[in-house]
Image (cartoon, rainbow, N blue to C red; front, side, top):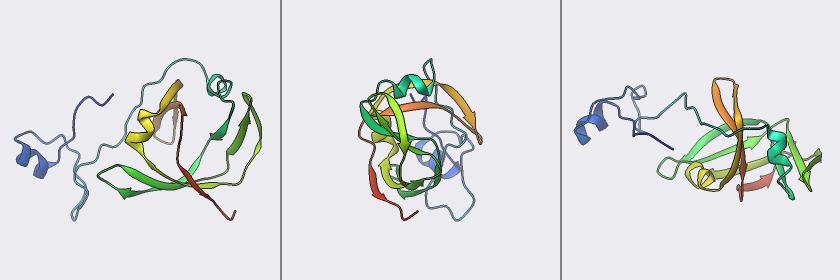
Amino acid sequence: MAKSAVYDRQTAAKEGRESTGHGLPVPNTYGPIARHLVLEGGSGGVEDLVRRVDRGLLVTRVWYTNVVDPKTVTLTGMTRDGLFAIEKGKVTHGVRNFRFNQSVVQMLNEVEATSAQESSGGVVCPGLLVHGFQMSSATEF
């Protein structure tokens, strides 16, 4: 759950608030952005989430993400070096990478379960079991 909004100097002045120090370098057309987010998790491991899936995909790494629409927090990106099929609660085989287009807000509303938090590359996040994540097309590699 988000605890509060973030403000740069411009949005803080507009809203009668104090800046939270989340401004980006000028020129900035996005407004303030929270970075170094921590998403709290549940307990157990990713294996526990996999056991709950009848048919789905296990994403272990993404290559990049870019903002498509800052108002809906829609991102595009690609999976990379770690996309696996899940069948009847077991990881069965690797599959071709996919491009995705997904609203983060929409995705978080579809979280069914979380694993314990893990830290990797400056991100603290649990594994997420998400219903209906929007994979848009297979990649060529």
